[in-house]
Length: 164
Image (cartoon, rainbow, N blue to C red; front, top):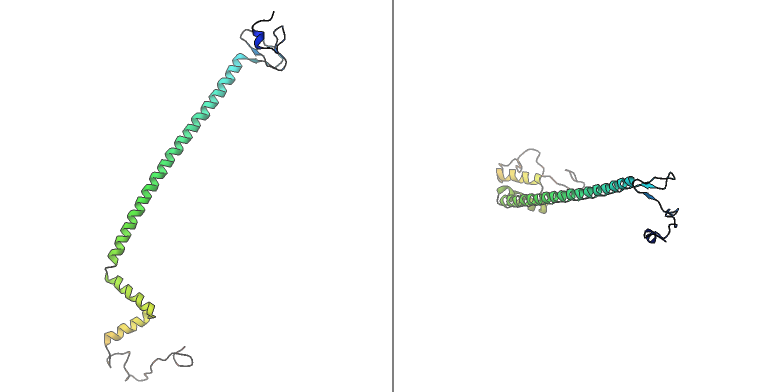
């Protein structure tokens, strides 16, 4: 008559020995055969505990890594916000300085130079014209004094004296 255990292990022979394709787990106090296919129960518990420890350690490391990434992301976002605020403050300060600069004499002079440059007047021309205005028209001017010996007006063009 078969035992109640045999109902759960139909592949086992009638005498209770395990089939050749199934490993036998030794119960405490039972002798272990030397065929190498059996695993002692304490060793099985040790392997299960080691596998569980490895899985728990991997889970802890994964959580730690995700926590570290979230902290780094928060720090980066905070730093980006600070940089953006600093950039906006700098931009506002530069706009304020530009508005203030537009009301200075130097800005007006630069605007005048830009207009003259558009007309084709260079800095050398402006310097000569400023000197001429300083001396005024007439014989007092060293630039327009026709009584000077060897005075010749500058003519420019191909084939003329003075270059070209």
